[in-house]
Image 1 (tube, one colour):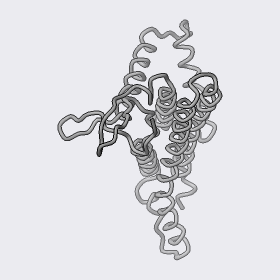
Image 2 (tube, rainbow, N blue to C red):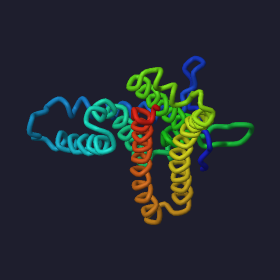
Image 3 (cartoon, rainbow, N blue to C red):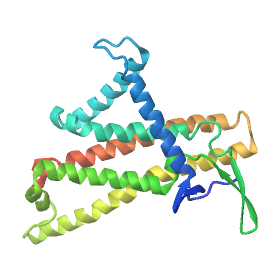
Image 4 (cartoon, rainbow, N blue to C red):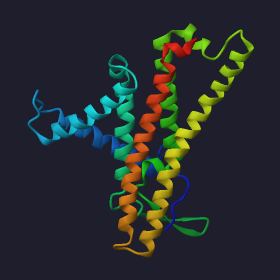
Length: 246
């Protein structure tokens, strides 16, 4: 069994291919939506259930981080997208560590070779997913910038009659593309490497030895979700700062 660089197709719906990472993405979405509905059914001003208490702890900590880097007004505006990135990525990372991922699947024949195709695979081990998350992150950053500063002040950041400022602005345009590459490849590289390591170790030693690597991936899953969230937050704060628009 080996981990391929790209997600494997399980079946097709018409001309639309359904890959194992897409199935995991749908499962992650269902898990998050179900938990949100369950946690919001019985809420009170003073938390009486462990679910509500745990949810509020997570939300309050994320909100305080955002507020410390910006201000309360902007924190209330940025919170939904920033918190969504963190929660979705960390849940997707941890689902990929559950038993059955990369081990339950089908044997298919391709070009005369028998290949094992897992039914479920870690979402962020697919570059398509991390690239999509990065595009959304950078796109929302510019949306917040335009809506906060206005089109004129937004464009002044990149274009100026001053040759020096114009050169700096062009460099910042290039930097926006590097943000996409940086966000996507950092998340993809760490999760893919961890997945490949776990598959290799588990194929050699089924018990005990994989446990330290599994605990390491639990830490990596949290760190990568936090890094993606923090970088997105920093990018938004910088581009919505009125002092940097002149």
